[in-house]
Image (cartoon, rainbow, N blue to C red; front, side, top):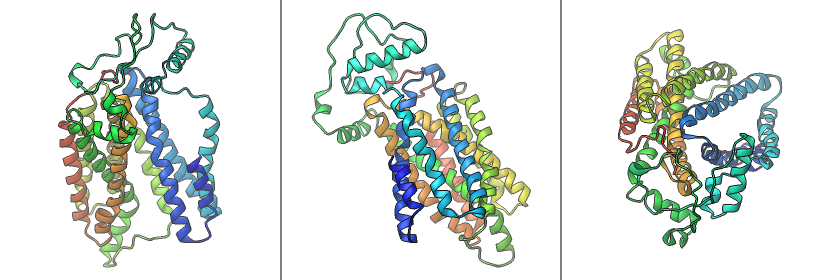
Length: 386
C-alpha cells in the first residue's frame, strides 16, 4: 500500500524536489520486499529450496524486462508521469491476494501462536492431499545457534508428547529489534553476519554497476576517443532499449544458478559465479568494440544475477526464524549502500575517461566478495531451516 501510494503521488509531483522526495519514499516501501523472500522460503522443503528460489527470482527478472519495455514504449509516446503511474499499478493489483496467503507457521510458532500455526499446517496438508503427523505442535527456542548440530527437515515437526513452549527470558525481555540485533552479533552468528554484510555490499556494487555500465560504456568510449568529457546526464531513450536487451541476460544467469545451487552448494555457486563475472569484466579494462563490449557485459550480468540470487537464498537459510527477516533485511540494506556508492565511485571514473580504473574497482570488489564466500562458516545445502 505504501509503495503504490507513494508511486501514484510521485506521478503527480509539482516539482523536481517533490519528485525526489516521493521516489525516496517509494524506495522505503520497496526496501521491505526482502520479507517476502523469508516468508516464501519458510514454506519450501530443504531439498527444493534452491530451485524454487531461482524460480521466484525469475519474476524479478521478468519485472525488470517489463519495466524497461514500459519505459521504452511510454516515454516517447506519453511522458514520465504516465510511466510512474503505470509502474505503481502492479502493487495495487497484488493487494487483494494478501487476504488469501497464509502466515508462516514458523513465525507463528515464534510468536507462541500454536493454534494458528497448526491451522496453517492443516491447510497445507489438505492442499497437498496429505495428513499431518500425529501429535501436538511444539516450539523450543534456544539461545544459541549451533550450525553443526542443525537437524534435518526430515525430522518430524510434530512430536507425540506435548511440551510447553519455552521462550528465552533474555530475548523476550528486550524489544524485538534490539534482541534480534544482539542475536545477529552474538558469538555464534557474528562471522556469518559480517561476511554476509560485506558480500551483499560487494554484490550490489557489482550488479548495479554492471547495469549502469550497460548504458554508459559504449558512449564513454566514443566520447573519450573524440576528446570530449562524457556526461552522465544524457537524454536518450536508447538507454531503455539497452536495459531491455541486457536484462535478458539475467535469464541464463538464473538457469546457471539453478544448475549449480543444489549440485555444488550455495558457497561454491556464489564464489564461482563471482569469479566468472570478473573474467567477463576483465577484457573491458581496455577499450573494446561495441559488439564485444555488449557480449562481455551480457555474460557479466548473467553471472552477477546468478550469484545475487544464491546470496538471497543463503541469507535466510543461515539465520533462525526469529531473526531471519531482520538479518536478511539489514544485509540487504547494507547491499543497497553498495548500489548508492557504485555510481559515485566507479561510474564517475568512467565518466571522466578513466575506464581502466573503473573496471579495476569492479574486479577488486568482486574478487574480495568471492573470497569472502569461501569463508562462510556453514553450507546450507539440504539443511533444515532453524
